[in-house]
Amino acid sequence: MSIAKRMLMRSAVAGVLAALATMPAHAGWDLLNMPKGVSELSREIYDMHMIMLWICTVIAVFTFGAMIWAMVRFRKSKGAVADGKMLHNARLEAAWTIVPVLILIGMAIPSVEKLIKIEDTSGSELTIKVTGYQWQWHYEYLGTGVSFFSRLARDSDAARQKRSGIDPRSVEHYLLNVDKPLVVPTGTKIRMLLTANDVIHAWWVPDFGMKRDAIPGFINEMWISVDEDKPGTYRGQCAELCGADHGFMPIVVDAKPPAEFRAWLEQQMAAAAGSRLAATE
Image 1 (cartoon, one colour):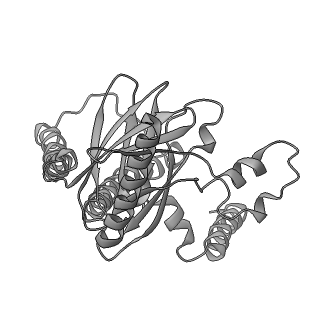
Image 2 (cartoon, helix red, strand yellow):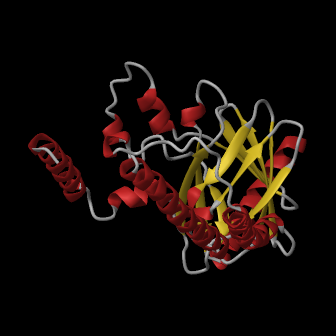
């Protein structure tokens, strides 16, 4: 190898090592990879994702490694000459057909099991209808009379306007807060019915491991749950381009312990009953 080629290779290796050294230990991976989530289902989806990722990584390393080795080992500068005859090896061809089929079957069986579980809404204890609008969400707790709209928090909405004079950095959770979050109980299987009133939207909270399109004229369903020991606030976004203000349509879910949720729901039911009574007078 010439001196110039050796210097070029050393420079490339040094550049790669320097770039890796400047990367945070885990921050980059956390941003690139999907979260484990806060439910048994989301963790199962994460585990399946990681298994498939590593299987595909091993296959890619083996395949591209063989290609690169062949290109380097049998390059023209080494005196390699192309074989003008078509070679045929029945055993080799059978192997590279059967082995990928077995790998795909091995990947498909656990994947189908997870897909069935994802679609199984039986045994749910609470049903919430979610309707997407440009650009807000409407939540209805079926059978309770409780419903409300949820839209971008007013302080974020004011700060995002042109020439508002408001520094977005002064607004807590800028563009990620809503005026009324969806409230759910922890440790509960919740059935979600999704539709839309105008264009296609998509309800997505990464920590739940689930996303569904909300389509006008159709009802899609899914289920979510939050671990009993993980109450808190979880954020998401509309994940379908739905118009000019698509980027200003956040989702906020407030997961409360069952007792606190029941108290909140009873308060909302009483307020809704009072509003209906006032409307009839």
